[in-house]
Length: 222
Figure 1 (spheres, rainbow, N blue to C red):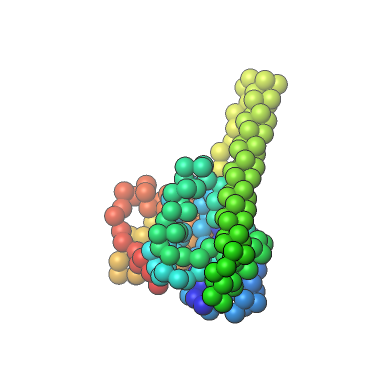
Figure 2: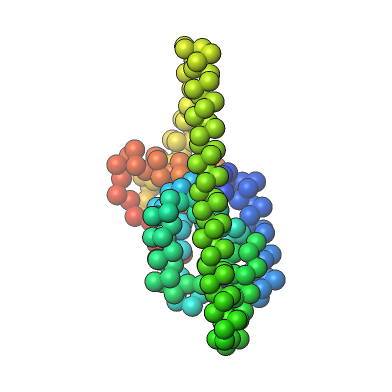
């Protein structure tokens, strides 16, 4: 069975490499044929993620969307989560979560032609567990944001002159990205390739591209 592996990591190197290796090992253990690997360095609270969009565009009905855990796919609001689920279902994709056995056990049952009461119960239980894990991921994110806000408020209360220090941009890397972006479409480099060349996350490339006000095109599918 063809599987599209989706990973979302907080950094481009260590976290992404670990997640990639884990998903590849899982796919091999399930005898999935890997059709593509898609990696975003975007927040899971955002529905619009370039690589997730590319996966949903390229995948075909009956194929697998495989993630390591539900929170790698979604920390979305309830409304956005329902939208994403609807897109996955309308595409006819089978969602498999590596750390949720019911997801791949249910798929095995479907492939083996199981359509009895037990299979129906498994389907309901699996969907409930996925929804529950998506909700837990969202609540965890909301608690994390609340703790950050409380920390900032405490610092400002202790020192009214304190200001949060934003992450400054790397001028040298931004210059490299701009050069590569302006070289398209002749260079035919994808956003991922540009990010790798400049040693930055894909989100940074998109920010630079937005700042350039560019309508540069990249390939939708490799």
